[in-house]
Image 1 (cartoon, rainbow, N blue to C red):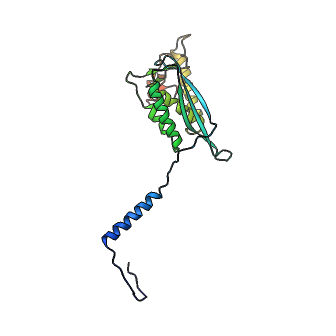
Image 2: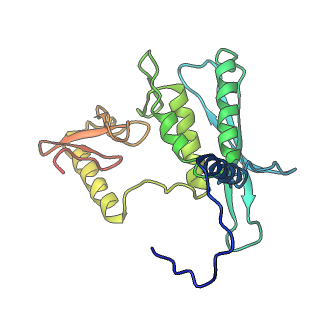
Image 3: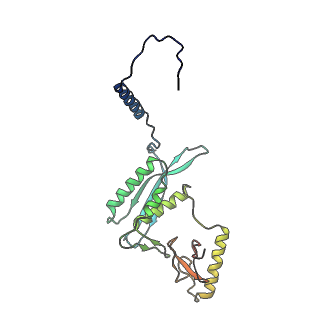
Length: 232
C-alpha cells in the first residue's frame, strides 16, 4: 500500500535487523504478561453442601462411603447452581487406601479448577479391572471399583443438573413394559417371574446398560431396561 508524504522530510532513520528482533521480543514479553486464565481455582468457603453415597461391592469387605461436596455458584441470583468442589471416600477397609486418597485428591483438584468436569465420569467408568470386574445386586455388571466410583459421580452430577438423566420417554417405556409382560406370560414359570430388580430370570447381559435384562422376543434380543434392540 503506497503512502503519500505531503510534508517536507526533515530526518530519517534506518531500522536494522537487530532493532526488529528487539521489537519482536518486546511484543512477546508483553503478550506473556497479559495471559488471561480461563479457569481460576475456586476458593473454599467455610460451608459446603453435599451428599454421601454408600456402595458395597463383592471386591471389598466393607462398604465405601463417597462424599461429594458442592459449592453454590451465583447464590441468590437467577443463575444460581451447584457444582462439585471436593470428594472424599471413607471405608474400614485399608486395602485400597493409598490409591483412593490419590484419586480423590486429583478429582478434587479438577473440581476446584472449574470448567467442564463431566469428562471425569467417562474416564472413570472406562477403567477395567484385570480380574474382569463383577456383578452388582440385580445383575448390573461393573468393570472395576473405579468404574463404580465413576457411576456415583455420574449420579451426583445428574442430581445437581450438570448431566442429563438417561432414560426412556413415555412411549418407549410403555413399549418395554408391554414386551416384558408378554415375555413373562409366555415363558416365565409360576413363582419365578422376575429377579430382585424386576427383570425376567435368565435374562442375559445387555452390552449397552450392563444390566441382566436382555431377552429374546420374536427372534430379536431386546433389553427391558434401556430398550436396546438388535433388530432396531
